[in-house]
Length: 349
Image (cartoon, rainbow, N blue to C red):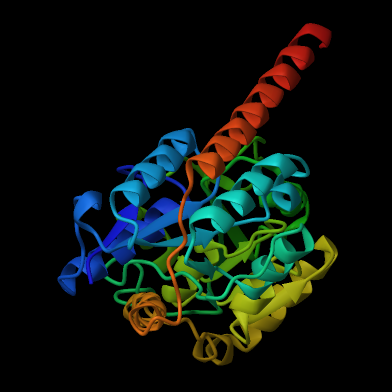
């Protein structure tokens, strides 16, 4: 089995998909099943989320499938994008069409994401699995993290690569105005659309620097809404931080008993007090699967589809020219619609 991840990897701090796929790629390399040349691969994994390279990825999938009809393709599906952005239902439909035309297996990042994609009109497939993400264990781990001391000022941390308002900035602004900064200090790392008065804002950091900041903190908080599988939360919990998360998206599903869930911002101070009082209990209840286990789940899921295929119980999908053309037209239409909206907003602002 030779696996290739069809993804435009970025160096340095970037989005969650980039960080996770880089980490899982390392696992496949160590297992000697990774193939750098997609034309020589038996398996292609691609990421189902919007990017500037999406058109090129769709074209590459068509060429690869045309050159090797037995090629098995797996989509790591995100979203739904419509629920995250409150628009762009069309791009979800692009991915649903692309999944139907190419994907022999679908990997969801949370059950919340799976159910919400169904509710947006996505059809079920023969082979589906829910596998949460995991970070690079050489970076995000409990090694050298500080020992919790309730007698000192408690350090709260939040992180986000995206500056989208839905990443929880209204809550962070509330904390900036209402948190007891004589007892707590808070740092936000990433891109923010707002300026903080009391919260210390640090621009995006390299992954090893981010891990150092997490290990120097006590409690992680995320208020991102409709987040299918927050890599920020996963990274923090792998570093041993109990967390406070908003009751939305995949957060409660990921958190388990490793923290507390809030609905209203006003609940947060009380939840912080509870975590500080029972800190070791929350920390011991963190149950995050390590990267090897997550990557092994990917491998096992792919292997199961291969076995069914070899037994003649499943025939790989054929990415026809007609389907390729329809998906490309849908993608072009979505992009042009967005350009028109941007232009219209510029003219009438």
